[in-house]
Length: 179
Image (tube, rainbow, N blue to C red; front, side, top):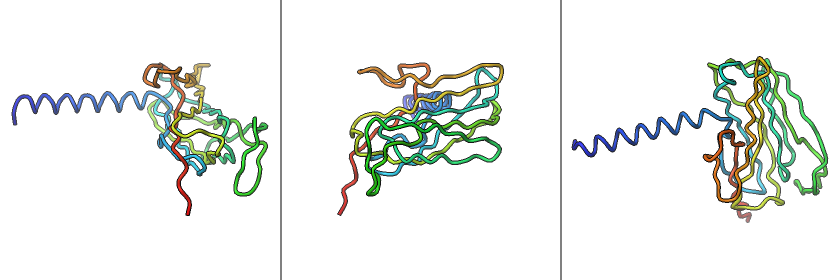
């Protein structure tokens, strides 16, 4: 193997490690793209606590256009939801929904050295626009009054990588064709 190929392989491996490390340094979505007019299973991945402190609560805000939200309970954690009116009614399997879950909170304990996932299901309504990003701001509350606020939404021309505390993002795809 040539020296250039070895250097290239090492560079690629180092890049992969850096990318994996930065992905664990945030609350992220496991599936980062989905079509509108479909059910989406959101898996929020939590890779660490707050500066070494255990996580005690994970809260996520549900953006407008995401309806019929159903969070998954976690054994050993308390689940709470906040319901509110939608800004505009949305169609859902022949019904018109005018209100629903706008925030989910799981309260428990996740040690800093552990990883976990927090799941909810939702419908991506036709009020959303394909080829755009949809953000789910999340707050991670930890022991000692510490908190990590994953709420930064990129400004025009910026990406999630430009921020220290980016909100988990989902790229919206066009609705799937129906026969």
